[in-house]
Length: 268
Image (cartoon, rainbow, N blue to C red):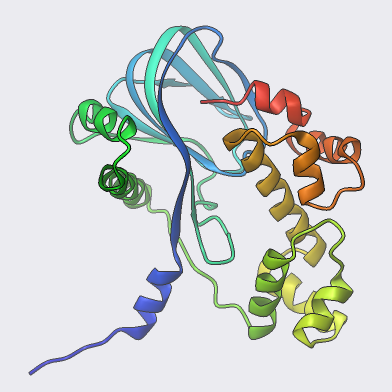
C-alpha cells in the first residue's frame, strides 16, 4: 500500500481565496467611457458582442473581441470606451492570500484568452439565478478561467511564509482596522517591540505598517462604495476618520475621484 500526504501543499491551497465582489450582465453604449485609477481589485470580462476597447496607462489600445475573456489586474490603471454598444459579463474579484495580498499582482497589464466555447447561455442562467448551486458553478468557472490565464501567461502566483510576528499583526490589524490604529497599539497587543514589528513588516511585506493599514482601509472603502449603498459618512465613520471631508480628501488622493463621483461613475 502506498500513502502520501502533502501537508504543505494542503496548507498553501487552503490559504487561497477567490472573492467575487460583484458580478453581472451588462449592455452598455457610448456612456461607457472613462478612466479607472489604481483599482484595488481585478476585473474579468467575457465579451458577448459589440465594439469597445481598453487602454492601460502607458500601454497600447486593446480592442475587446467577442468570445474572449479579458483580465485587468488590480493596480492597473486604464481608460475604457465603447464606440457604439457592447454586451458583456463582468466580474470584480480578488484572488488573494489569507492576508488579502493579491495573488494576481505579478500581472502588470490587461491580458486575454479565447473561450473554449460560447459561455453566454451558461452565465446568463447563473447570473440571473438565486440558487446557491448556480453561484458555486459560476465561481468554479471563474476559477478555471483564472487558472487558464495563469498557465497561458506563465504567471507565478506565490503565497508568502510570514513570521509569527507578522501573522499576528495582520490578524490584529484586520480585526481593529481604523485610521486611528497606531503601530504602538499593534505592537503592544501582539507582545513585540515597535522596532521589531516595523522591521519584520518592512522585510516581509515590503511596506510599512501604516502603509498596510492605509491600503486595507482604502480597499475596504472602495468595496463599500461600489457594492453597497452606505453613505459616505457611514463609511468614513466605519474606518475612524475624524470627518467625511478628510476621508473624501484621502480617497480622492488614491483614486482620482471623490467618493460620490467614484460611486456615480463606477465601471461595470
